[in-house]
Length: 493
Image (cartoon, rainbow, N blue to C red; front, side, top):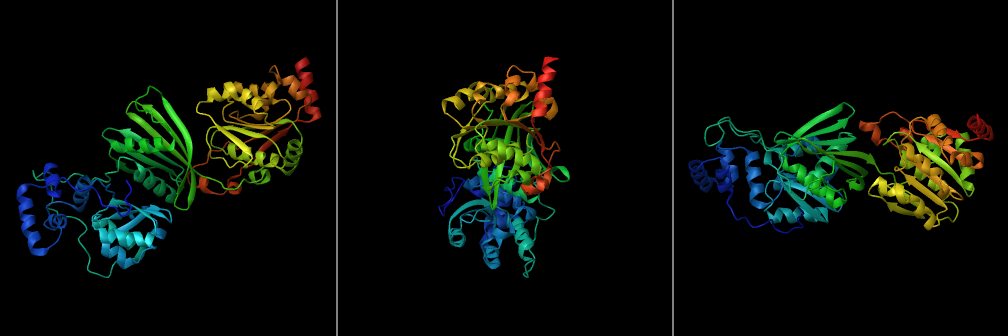
């Protein structure tokens, strides 16, 4: 929910009535707090905490319910100190606010009192753009500011309610309600993307469990557990991802839904590879994080040997040929296709890419077609390539398994074809293709090469290293005249 110095919705219920209905305080405690408030002039929420009747977290939760603004548990390790330092320390302490994440023109800020329009206006003038407001408890905001600027020289504030605090019925205080998120899911998604990136994580796992949404980040240490969220946060997350183009499984009988989207998170340009899966406990979501390159590295920077690179450069100079990039998913195959496309783009050519998402940095002259289902791409790619008169066709991640044989069909004649598939063993792939119905004709005289991707799984901070640092050595098989003769002799025998 975004607030561009507009007021939060007008409360229809009092803060104390929400606390009473939630069983957090009782009427007698409210009366006592009101009497104390008249003496001190403090806010009613502050007074209830001062008297030990409840905690700051409960006040934040109730204020969120009252105003319709998300409440977050501001954690010092999750904030971006660069954004915090855009504001004078004394301003943040005075208005009780902490910037969480965003860009230079749009910022999400946690405030103890988002109804203070003078404070909001002061913050907006510093940002020079839009503010998205959330509620944070005063204690968590102070700790976050202290983590950046150092402890305040003022007298310390009590950080928690006295030990006598509890529910009105005398039972123990429940665990803090970490987050009450907006239904649009925008802040929920951005919070976890920002926090996961700061931890060097490569994946975020959202798994429904009994009465909660479990969250894990995949870091260098493995799968690290994070604070659980309310179960409805998963609904908000999928709603936001749906707006961005990843279809939700809710209301369908589908087992899974997946896709990739590009997103800027602060200074980081990311690609989010999203997978929804229908499990017994509900819909589980995994977001794979990776950097979005703005420039395409050359083949030698990706690990291709100088000899193999020279052979491929000669190949793409000609009018036809096939290069198949093979290896496991998420091993940089799309970036290799982009590097091949960059080599082929030096001359005026009609270039066509059929791809699962619009995130690979292809040259501008490439016409891009995004498919929703692999089956559709498999069924229609040949007609598209021929019908569009493509000189160069890029087929990304849909000719998998035995369907890779279709890359040798008549639609490949007279054009360059760059294909990505999931075969792991290049020699086994070559033997398989040689035995298919089009293999003999293609291998007789058509330029042909295989580029094998590294098979090691990269997780954690290794995902965020540069393409050159991540290059694990691409194996290459360039078909020579000797290889062609050998293949033909094997077929004859």
